[in-house]
Image 1 (spheres, rainbow over the protein chains, first blue to last red):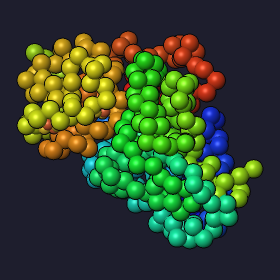
Image 2 (spheres, helix red, strand yellow; image 1 turned 90 degrees about the vertical axis):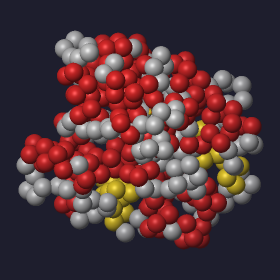
Image 3 (tube, each protein chain N blue to C red; image 1 turned 180 degrees about the vertical axis):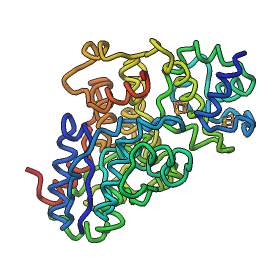
Image 4 (tube, rainbow over the protein chains, first blue to last red; image 1 turned 120 degrees about the vertical axis):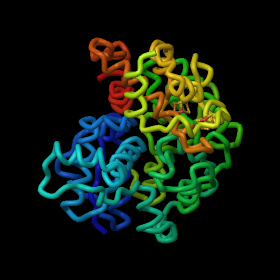
Length: 262
Length: 127
Ligand code: SF4
Ligand code: SF4
């Protein structure tokens, strides 16, 4: 199985573990992730303005590069995933935006949202399969109680993300079961950590993150997993030290279970 | 009332504000509710009424987390976050109205801050 892969800026810098463990695990599972030759930062957030064109072109270029290679495009960072899927949806379904973007880019052939974007978790669920993953596990995380944290960007807006039920998701819980861990049931798993507001108002991010942390702890989790570098940062940095659970990338647990964690 | 602002905001957001039934669910689910002077449902009806200046002058436009909770949970598919975004764009597109500039960044850095936080904030707060 060969896929194009879009890591994004943060995975080349502060979130190298998210990327590294994903690559090691993919290799073990017989999945080839080929990083796009040239890619630019997605900008971190999809501009919701329909008349914002230029700020979305980096995403469209990445999508088109995958199309030219004839491959599906795998993403890993929750934010990149959200931006690329929304940009792709706009190219497919917003005729005015699509026309303008294509007019700017003058590609060999116009891009109309042909590429299929899949998150690494979807790759595990839909292509590898959680059953096959389970069989590949050499060090099951037996007895480990983990809180799967979706945050906001992985699932919403659900009609575009199309990944799982936005209010009652199970993809991360099923993933945790496949690697032998015990997912915890908790209410705050799909509520926002405060996100980029940390740049504007650290207190607001701290308040939101603390509520997430408190809930995971109250429900008996020993650690939280996420696919988002900003969630990880907020939960680790903007919560009270006392009672703070470890926060990990889900790929780290995956690599551990597959026996490829260095 | 500035008719141009209203038209531009409706165009940028692509939202049909007339679909709103004022149930307030968007505001009830908004994680930034306490920080906002005007709440998501107010953005929707104030734009409908053309009461735009107050929104444009309010700090509320910088408090939206773009978490899409209001978008997901609005029973009428209004997508209030797009209205908040369009009002903010209407402000920061004006010359000299950036809310965050590269010069502000060094003071906000720490050794773990992910690039994602910086690029997202720049995208949301400046043009
Ligand atoms: S949830 Fe939707 S219908 Fe209800 S007040 Fe908000 S925008 Fe209007
Ligand atoms: S997207 Fe913005 S306005 Fe809507 S619920 Fe989230 S923080 Fe509130």
